[in-house]
Length: 173
Length: 359
Image 1 (cartoon, helix red, strand yellow):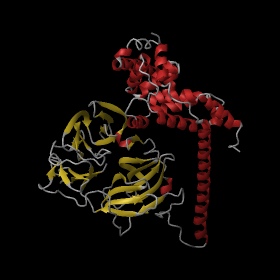
Image 2 (cartoon, chains in turn yellow, cyan):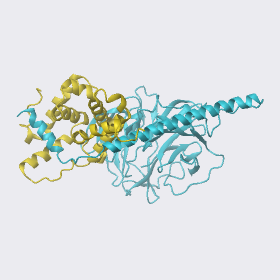
Image 3 (tube, one colour):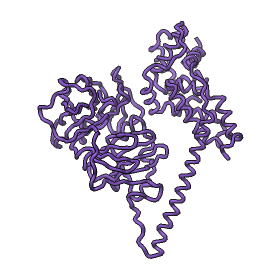
Image 4 (cartoon, chains in turn brown, purple):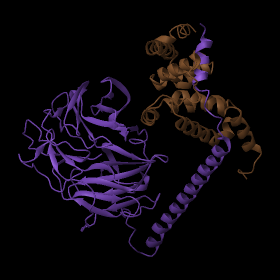
């Protein structure tokens, strides 16, 4: 009965389809590897599906985001990422323009941050989450989010001095 | 520039990520998990029922109660406990030292005869009163030994100088067999086995364990202290997030002690885990002390012991996975290969007095 399309399954599929691309991009930014990001998201989605009956009436997106980010920054994920990825995230379609160059420099600098720092940046600036919400997702204090954001931006500026102007603001957010 | 610029940079960095199709697969996988859990639950109920019948029937007919310590199939969850047979057949083809002891001055130094890849490292045991550890030998893939003559390696002691650890750990050899890592007090020494050259990296602490992260970084740390991750490229040592004693194959094993389910072991109880764990997919193997010395395979997904080998009394060191289902174990009966799928135990090498490391 549970495998019959429709009902819970249809609802779950619709929910995931509306979010999977955005979530995969976020996972990729935290992991730095396409395959690992998909693996990470797939694992989080299976966990969500297992609890769909209980979670769907609440805030399934928050539940999913928490699982995915915590898995992403967990230690073994970091180890796998570092071993699977010896190069910056794959950049297809780079055309040598100034914009493309900026993109490569930023991606390379981002790769050198810790997974938690990357997660904080993605949650705060790409997913537009508040400091409190980011802290909740990652299971850390708001103070940690603030300090990690500042450290991450400082580190990015050190690693990519050519992007200094682009990365100057943001700490005060 | 506003924070929108950072969002734009992040967005551009992930712009090439294609849209996945994960929804149906995730749902299907979750249903598989649910079905498997139900099957396990049903099997458990049947096993309990059969166990109850097995206890009741002999008592009713005056027979002896069943032996609850049956070493092959405890009734609760089907965990199988294998034993080392009295006669163990030899297994050839595993590149390991075949005899122990020091090999004398005739052995060439590593600097004079480096290897293209090491098959194993070996450090013979020395008397407890010795102030210096024995030499570390490198067994090349050509079957010849070399002696690491530099640098001079020391024992690692804990803070109170009570416990001594050999510089060679079973996890010292890099996955490609080209580097060897030695934890030392306040430093990590890495020897390039293909050149004989070595480097020393400052790492604070009474370091006792090493664990390779690929071939460019090493986790190093003391048994109960925090571990450091040493980047061999930059020489930088940064605190790691997990304790090294809890790592398996450089992955954290959060479900290993004390939360692992050992109910399937019946009357066997694990009191304490020993040494580092080794991961292979969703399986982890680790030595344990308890009512008997055991080597236990743990299913990470279920956080449960799924198969175990009761080993002879004496020191036990797991040397890792030989293949997908075979575990190498150093015991008082020698180095054994235990097939954790079939339960077969074969002998790889005669008893060794010392430490062995494999890639």
